[in-house]
Length: 197
Image (cartoon, rainbow, N blue to C red; front, side):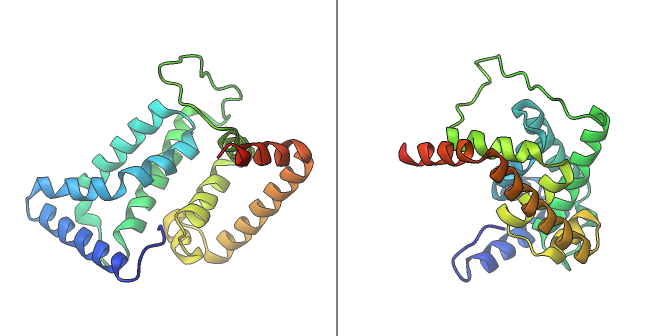
């Protein structure tokens, strides 16, 4: 969850809960409110896992369809955001299983129409993310980007809280070692990227 102004997050939660109840009562148009609130962050989350714009767009669409179809399973005892991320997590895991056990080593980005400009700083981030396993990327994104607690992440991923905490510490260490091995090249790239802004 992104940091917000005090009170703003409560208003957002109330608005989402109200939209959920309206959809459950038959008002399909209220689902647009939910999509609008989560579409961007869901796209970012999926893209860092899938690393392909077309697959990400398809995944986000499928996640929102599944959320709509399963809205009757949602309970306000947890945040709607955490429920949606849990659904997204399981969908992405299933997608990865269908793609096979091995991640593609070479990504085909030859099609210039679908290629997005990536700054040097972003390319370093993508390179570091590619170094992590799918599970590690999920944990990093949920903790560092979405700022969920270890308890919330354990609920999303179906792991024990202590396990999530240990895995997070290991992946941080793994990234720091990778940065250390990259040495000046990584630091130089980041320094160059910072100078361009």
